[in-house]
Length: 480
Ligand SMILES: Nc1ncnc2c1ncn2[C@@H]1O[C@H](COP(=O)(O)OP(=O)(O)O)[C@@H](O)[C@H]1O
Ligand SMILES: [Mg+2]
Image 1 (cartoon, rainbow, N blue to C red):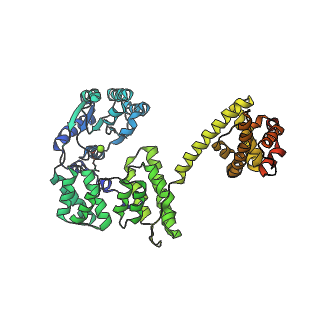
Image 2: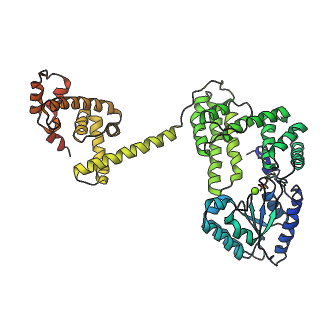
Image 3: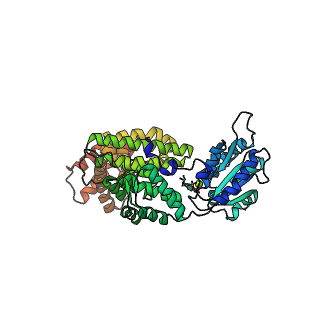
């Protein structure tokens, strides 16, 4: 991954405490508390809870402090709090004194308010236990710490508030980044981004990067265009259209991030439609290269919960795929539904049909469903495929549904069903006429005579010939 692809919120993360803009009050509380820990006498409150709006430097301050004080940062994220075992694993680390030469540690439980949503009492207890046994500073962060459930955590912690950043502070950081990147940025444009961010520096930096990467400059008209079209979500088809039509990286990124599809589904849709859109093999290859790397990152995120990487997934699946087009002429492609998703739906239906078949036949054959599946269905399937007329008679005898016939006969289904229809018609007429049990239960002679009674002496039709040649009900049974 090339350096310039790094999300700026990561690239420009404060490396030192003084680079964390504003938040003086938080620093005044946090730093002495940390120093006290490092002096060897744990403070009265062994944990702190940093709280305040999103994107104002809570996580950044902890990371900067860890770097400055040369502490090993042991970090755990909101999504991990659901599993009590994971918290206990961290707790064991926390409870262990650093070895003589080992680096000292700082434990970060980021976004603990995530835990209140999951209603996990066990997780909360595990955190409290961690705080009581820890031999290292424990830092928690939260956007909203006032949930009733979090009261025990509040009581166990030194509470440290973070302020919403002022527009001026946001502007300062944006300007600094523009200078560092060598991007021409209009003041007016940066003010627009800053005022829109409502003090959330993370979103402001993301907006800045989105425009700057697309155009190499940041003007107020570009920013306005981005902001206006921002807050809506795209359907899969819209998503693909926007993605493949985008001329700039930021447009492609917007296409893949502004949809309500989950990440896997986004990748599936793109996967299916790359060859639909691109005609040049090299373009297709480049696009799949990007997409497969997006998939690798997504897999890594799932294993390690490093959500910071999500931005790479979007970069690769969005701009990576969109800018893969070099030679393909743009054409209005008819996008298709992902086969994999269709296949899953189809196999689910097949599995259900198979289950129903096994159940119906097991009863009639006085055996178990498992035996039917392993010993009967495979043979039936062969019969249906290679002897459709025989299959039709079996279907009639066992009263199989159309779906079951399709399942057993596969490509021969149409033929079997045609035979079956003919059989049923042939069977119904005499049955209705004579008000007798279904024809399959009776001897062919009876059926023939019934037909004759109704004046149908033309026994030369294919159906009746087959009927004659073929069989009696007892003949069908002996198949098993
Ligand atoms: N006070 C700040 N000073 C400098 N950069 C900041 C500040 N707040 C946020 N940022 C930028 O925004 C990004 C997200 O900030 P973060 O510390 O993760 O916010 P949160 O308060 O949600 O934990 C950081 O990587 C950094 O680039
Ligand atoms: Mg954070």
